[in-house]
Every structure is written in C-alpha cells, then in structure tokens.
Image 1 (spheres, rainbow, N blue to C red):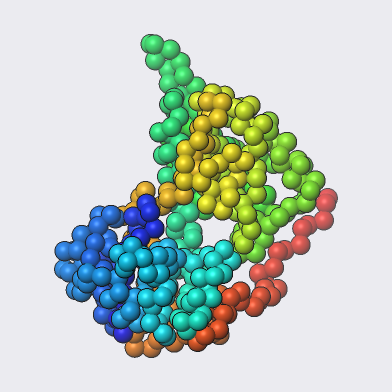
Image 2 (tube, rainbow, N blue to C red):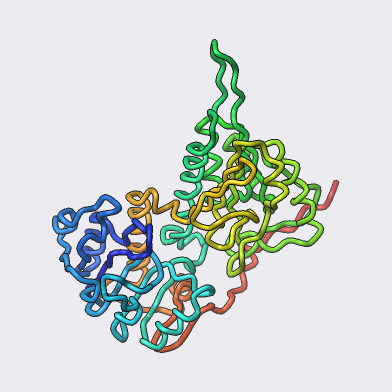
Length: 394
C-alpha cells in the first residue's frame, strides 16, 4: 500500500501530515511513502530529508490524490491552485482512504462529495477522547501548542513585562492573566503564563479541573453553584441560564482587573459561546490583550475578527486561527505521530482493516463504501466510568 502526503494549500498553513521521522515509522508498518515536493518545506523539513528517510518525492498533487491508497492531510480537502483549481476531493480515486481534520458538522457538502467518490474518510477531529485513544488525540496535541503560543502572542502584543520588576528606575507589577476554559489549551496557557512570571487566574464550568489549575500555581475562580459543566468526551456542556448570567457577571468584574484574557471555550458541533462582550472589552485597561482561541468557531469575544488582530479602545483582540501552524515543526511532529498511531490502529499495510467494532475507528470514520457513517452511535458509559454520586452533606 502507498501512503501519500500532499502539500497543504490552505493560505497560511505551514504544517505537514508526516515528518521524515514519522514517515520512517509508517514505512516500518509496511507502507511505501510518497511525498509531494515541498510539502514539508514550510515546517522546516526539506525534500532531501524525506528522500534520506526512503520516501519517494513526486512533483504534482495528482500523483498523491489520484494514485495513493491512503492520503494523510492536515486541513480538509479544498480547491488546489497547483492542480488548476481542481478540488482535492475530486482528485481522490474511488475507494481511496483519506485521514485529516475534517470537521464534518461544518463541512457537510464536503462529506457528501467524499461519500459520492466512495472514499473512506477518517476525521482526526472526531477521534474519541478516551484513554486508549490518547496517542491518536490530534485535537489535544494541537490545543497544547495553541495554548502555549497564545501566551507568546499575548506577550508580544502586551506593552509591559509579564513578570514583576523592581529596579532603580521604578517598580512594575506582574501582568494579571485570566484564562477562560481549563482544558488542554487552557492548561498550556496557564503553564506558559506562569513560566513568564504572570499572576494567573482561571475559570472553568467543570469543577473537576480545579485541582489541575491550582497545581500549576494559578487561582481557580468559582461560582456559588452546584451545576457541573462536564459534558461528553471531556468537553464542557451548555449551562443553565442562571449559571451563564453568574459567569458573565464574574467575567465583567475580572475584565476591569486583568491585563490579558485568553479564551478557549468550545462546545462540539456548535458556535463558540460569547463570553467577552463589547462592554467588557471597553472596560479593560488600555494596552490589555485578548487572545481568542475559539476564533475559527465564531469566537468567545464579541469583537473577534477571525484571522486578524483587532484593536478596540486600546485593547488588542487577537483572533489568529493558525497558532499551531506558527510552530509548524513541532506541530507537524506531534500530528504526524497521532496519524502514525491511527494508521497502526487500522492494522498497518499487512493487516489493514476498517473494523467498525473498534470504538476508535468507529468514532473517527465519516464515510465508507458510499455511505455516511457520521455521527457514530452513542455508547452508554459503563457504571465504572459514570460520575460518582456526590457525598451527602455532613
């Protein structure tokens, strides 16, 4: 079997779906590896390194999409200017396998196009967030990088030190950072901000993350509510109206006090919730910075412009949608390892098997043999994995 890795054509995308290291690992699973010329250049991996790893370098995307058994990508298929504007999904041959980030809820026309071509497509954004699949969890890999990079971008835009300074010329207090959402991205942001010397506080609707936040030296902000925001797959769920009103009051108060806000709140399959409103932005000190990690899904800040840096009343709002791509070398290595483990889960070249009884495979598969198989059927958690009952009050 041949695995093909094309050059990404989405503007600003620097990542590649296989590095020379992960290509070598894939070859050990029995595959021949074909790389489009220049596919890894923007991530710091020249063609010569792929050739040294035993890969075949081909000049055109059609030699990847039209001839390879399995195509590994980062972004969903789109129109490819290197193929005279042909759509990458149309270049796939019937029966091919495609593994990439797909976002099927937002790309239903693309899903239908892949179904019609009888492409077997796996979405890396749909890999179940279960213990056994952690090594394939590309969303967490990219979120970790995005959270770290969010703080780097904030520090670049912020006109003061993050750490406090006491010098002969005067005293500067440390920056105050609020992180909304303490998932993988939020925890990475907390760690980076603490590492730079900032005073960090965080909020999450899931009380279970309090211990993690505090273990990193940040303050965990709480509301006087019994409501638990833990949803499926480790994500937060939509909260009650009363809870939302209370958290918005908290954010309104915090906006006046902090210098940096990093938002990471996402709800699967829905637009990102608006948590930072126009009046909150206007109440922040001049020179403050907001980094909206949900920008691509509509944004947590009302004034976010996806892909841009906006400025309102002296407050910079960073809506960048390419933060993992800004660290393309390590992002490609992480993503490439996620893909390697996923391909290994499929059995490698010798034992390739689309096993729909495998919960990881079933969770990620979107189209197969001319059918749309997404979303997967819900699996009821076993009694051992359900939340333990709260102890009775003393």
